[in-house]
Image (tube, rainbow, N blue to C red; front, side, top):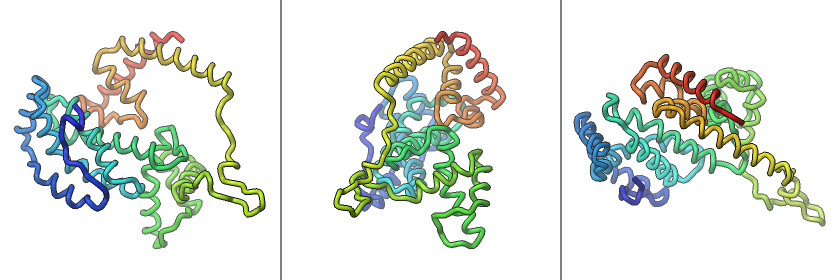
Length: 291
């Protein structure tokens, strides 16, 4: 399933957003019974027409979620396209026998696709690699705005120590990480060729950057070690059954990881059962790993 086979409406430029939203409103909202029937047709016979109806009936959900990301300054057309890719993945994997609506399941795939796009596109500066840092990136502006409004302050790039500490406690990061992320998000991206000296000898911003890459020898050793670990992990994961593999991947290999609540909805089991399956899968993988 791809955008080509789906033949979906395309948003062209920011000026076309209103027309795009009007166009996708023409697709009908499905009843639960209609959705189940179409989902079963897709699952059992790979009927692309059924999949197309499922996708187009949820384009409004993608657009609604994409609008929440407007503050990152990225083209809405790209954001919606990424969300549509996530929606199609959700339709492809959706199991109508689980008992919940497609929109409940699809929103996690859509959000994940959009967040990955933001993280890879928003800035030249690497925003963060851990789940906590990504959570900080996607929540800092909202929490900061609430605090400023509560304190009756004008919108400001700066944070007080108390505000930084409060955000840090809420998101399980350090105040220093809050300050650093706030600085990155407040500053405009620099051109690498922007001059920073008025002297006769021109100095550009890129001339001041420190090369943090590893030496070729060290990089080769690191790559070899990474390949060995990746191969070992892949072999170990093949020992898991399908549900164990999905939960282990979502909890241990996905960043940000899905929550127990999210996985309980996806698999129609309790949060405690998700935790048990995760732990069992981790023990299997850990026991099979040979590095």
